[in-house]
Image (tube, rainbow, N blue to C red):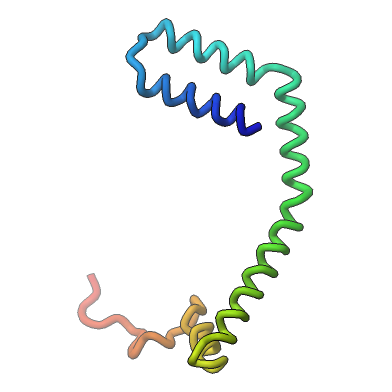
Length: 110
């Protein structure tokens, strides 16, 4: 799979960067279309897509758990303690106005 990605990237770079003309461009595009339309490639792409759909929730859970663990580790080492962590959570809340002295607009509106 990595080799295929490398080949596609090389072909794209060649097409974009080379001055080989329209004929060479057509040759490369025909080769890319043959690969794309190959039943083995389609089958492999379908398998990869299905596996990705199945594994996405598992990966999301693992990432969330790792982020939570990392956040806890940072909070444990923080010289500010957990009260600072609560303060940061309040500031990161999109509906919070904690950082605003006056949440209302000032001056004339357009």
